[in-house]
Length: 297
Image (tube, rainbow, N blue to C red; front, side):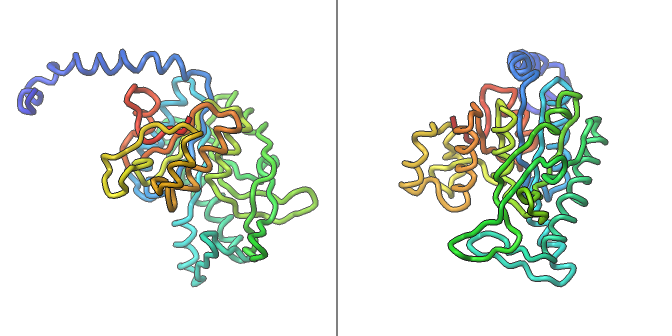
């Protein structure tokens, strides 16, 4: 069909749209009542139009009865705030060095500004969102990371997930929005900056989620990093190491894949890395047979 005819008579495309709806209906039925954990960050979080599109997708999922948990990071926003206050960002082996002053800024940006910004957009789009941090109700407990004796300050790894507060909100139809600041283990009153990807995967396991999705700024796993059309749509968990060994999975993709494997080994049946820069990529993944990005199964 040429564009001119479509503009003159958009009804000519009704058959196409009916096919889309018919294809989506079985997916609606499958996912209603199921729990999906979405990790959100990267460029999709910086672009306001993309951010709104992601929030619309999540509200749609919630409206039809899918239990969605949104876990967010905020590295670029933290860097921006540190620049504003004249404090230099310092990284050691890819992890942010977090002294007490930096930890205050991390907590302020993640649990204050970003978390409430996201909740506000979800509410404006018609959703019922509640903002949480890992500190609330003891949701996330963490211990200080010791990387080969290198002190990273208040950087922690999640040791416990207590998901009852999230489950209660999901059962009441709310969208929990989780910022990844964690409380120390029993007797440790410190707050810790934790990796949002890993935290999201562990939350998915604790909730016995049906799907774990990482919204990123890449199409997925590519055979050729310079060719976006070389996407590998499905990788079995047993084949991951081979792709790492031959260099197909490399660099920043490795920790994302490791988080998928963490969720998968914890009992989450479907884990995905999808391109958050594609408008409504979440809906495409959930409600079509073509899917999008790379699934680790």
